[in-house]
Image 1 (tube, one colour):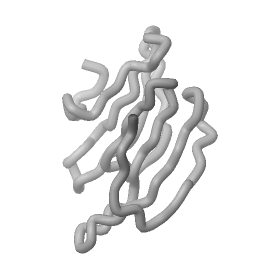
Image 2 (cartoon, helix red, strand yellow):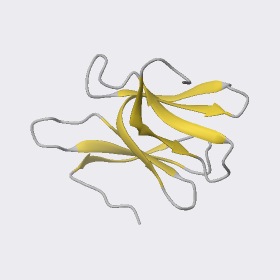
Image 3 (cartoon, one colour):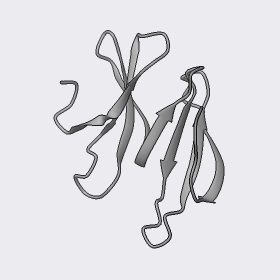
Image 4 (cartoon, helix red, strand yellow):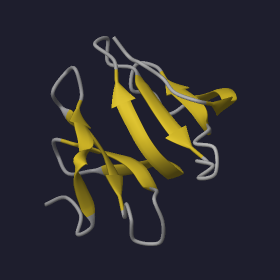
Length: 100
């Protein structure tokens, strides 16, 4: 295991196969965790805190979701292109999303 508190359904292998993205500490203090990555040498890096879900596109870009409003199900959408840490906040109050 990379970390003690990994949720098995909350990880993705990068398109290149040399990096694993995962949410650490999910459901420990709430329905969210810290989005991190680990390379093949075991080096880890925090991408963002407070993430409740993420997904990887076929091209390797990462979408992640934060600030879930449990009353109406809306959330904030973030985007990270080409496995870089310079992610962008795309929009707030998103109701749902479908990747294809």
